Image (tube, rainbow, N blue to C red; front, top):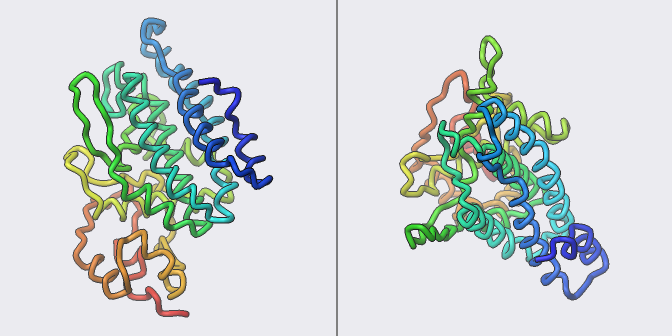
Length: 307
């Protein structure tokens, strides 16, 4: 695919101009965007030392940031109108992204071997992109699109085993050993270098929104489980910076709840409270995580109390 044809600017111009071929342009942009990620694959045969590998990972993080920001800018053009293409094409994007990684031999499962470490820049890209996209969709009340990517079971084909497995969005957040272990050399150690880097690359005005989005991803993962026992829930690393008790403060509004309830798969406030009552809050709190208890963060006692 010629990635020079299906560009971000073409998508933006198609939206602004009301181009009737927008769906074709957007679909092909997504495909070409994913293809471009192959340019950042690290070839271990070119790496002579572990230190060089760390540097290549950091360089990859820096370069992939440009792609991440580009993608977020494109999606932002759709959010003002809550365009229906978001609901249908964002799950398709993440499905294609996961299968691209499989085809390229890029394992997202974390580890300390060089074969695992060489993909830490992709792990950072995935986590940062997913959190910011969640925050963007929340801010613009694109709840149906967000629900679609959070509740979709992505089908990933492994050609080596000739096996298709179902995964969910938890695969986009994996522990980053390069950042959190090998480059965490300060004394005392930082709680999360990954969180520090996401903060570094975010706009200061929106970082608080990213924190809340990250914690919401943890909450929703509690009733969106998979068979992967190594990843029981989304780890909200940005919560090391959290200072808020209420993660979705607007849930106090009845009208906001009516729009946002699709995220939780409920029909009314009674079902919402039952869901929270029946959900085990699994996270072990401590110095690393500043996550409000589930019922506090999601306004169990206040939800829908205002018009």
